[in-house]
Image 1 (tube, rainbow, N blue to C red):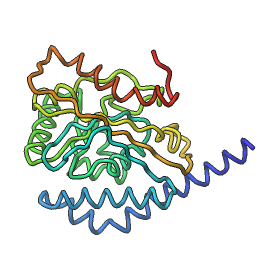
Image 2: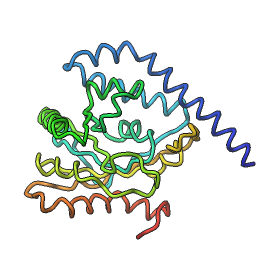
Image 3: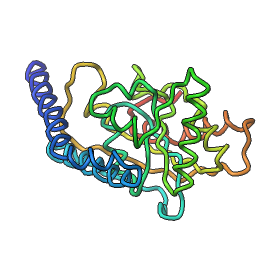
Amino acid sequence: MNVLKTVFKKIWGFWFYFNLAIWFFVLFPVFALSLSFESLYPVAHQTRRLWGKLLQIFSLQFWSVKYEKKIDFKRQHYILCSNHTSYLDISMMCQSIPGYFNYMGKAELEKIPLFGRFFRTIDIAVDRKSLRSSYRAFQKAKAHISRGGSIVVYPEGTIPDSAPVMKKFKPGAFKMAVDLGVPILPITFLDNWRLLPDDGKYMGRPGLARAIIHAPIQTKGLTEDDLEALSKQVYDAINAPLIAEGIVKEK
């Protein structure tokens, strides 16, 4: 039985990544044009949303999104923070959050095939070891937010080996939120880690990917002295459903 499950997951993994590549090339003309002009970046984002939707539908990975509180994304932009357990998180963010947003990630992402083009244009790549790179990334994020967009930051920095157990959050997302006075919107992805694990085996399975959008956490009036408490508040909000579902144990 275990052998059959492994074979099925391998076949499904091939089908998933085949779909990922095929739909990218189908949509490539739109990507090529919209990523060439900054004024068309919102078109690139909507096309990326469509790419993820087609990928998940044809891979039989459907989604369910639950909001703890009604949110008006047209009037307010956010620093979007979620747990990071799978590359499926990228697509699921597009299916969970309406409107225009950019991803912020490590500079190495610029070198990844397909995704690299986005981090050289529409998204924000940052080399955390370089103060100059960090400053440029902050200014780019500030400009994006001033135009009414949101920013996705995975505060763990990378997909941890311990997933679905989260590791300690890095301070960058919270410092940026405080400096810009932008609220943080915590998001919990419950199933991505089991549907498309980041274990280097390129295996996975179909199923339902659930997302929980928590109530926004305000940052206006906070200072750098509040960063640790803010980080813990966001961590606890994201972690609570994982504990409630028995996915991780309460510490």
